[in-house]
Image (tube, rainbow, N blue to C red):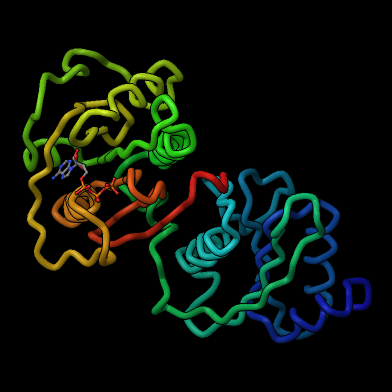
Length: 276
Ligand SMILES: Nc1ncnc2c1ncn2[C@@H]1O[C@H](COP(=O)(O)OP(=O)(O)OP(=O)(O)O)[C@@H](O)[C@H]1O
């Protein structure tokens, strides 16, 4: 592999897969050509990006940019595992941009099933449309950045499996979305969500993104829910509803300002809105 840098060539040596997170077409094609021409068991070259601009196969679609490089890498690896491109014990080289505007870093990791976070499943294996989960996450991140009139706010969004979620919750107040047919992602709806987030309870959103209700007090069974210590009732309710139903919960914490996603009763993603 004379024309890839020595450092990259050394790291790719004996790797089982290479994940390219921001390849140009020429970089990708050169990579594939050089690996295929090497005569040995070539690593799988997988592109992980928002769009498949380079016509790569295999390709793992990134639903959000994941500013935290660890999240981006976890998503890529878990996506590649889902497609049987990599498996436990594999050595994976990630070519990924860590700082905007700087050249890519090369990080070599060993796939460890025990650190499987579920970040890929959060989007792709959820009942709800991945675009709906992304839109709700974006609303929560934006709300976390700006707060309400400059003050930090908390919010709880329960996405997917809405019928069951409604059965496991009760109304705290009049539902402003009762007869409306509005969906997340619509800019006006995002303003409404932010406005109503000051009030108690959870938003319930359907698999396709319809806002079913605001002000729901969740009453899920909470036995065996494993959420990090120190998180309060909002997070516990959000985590527990995802164990009791097939929903995903996205929680903005009023106290520490972080946005967390829960699925299957587990914390699967934690982002700091200030870093977005
Ligand atoms: N079971 C529940 N269902 C819906 N909303 C709830 C539930 N429990 C608590 N909340 C909401 O969470 C708010 C904050 O509660 P609490 O401070 O205990 O949670 P927390 O997890 O520490 O969240 P934060 O970090 O935002 O303070 C409550 O005022 C209420 O609006």
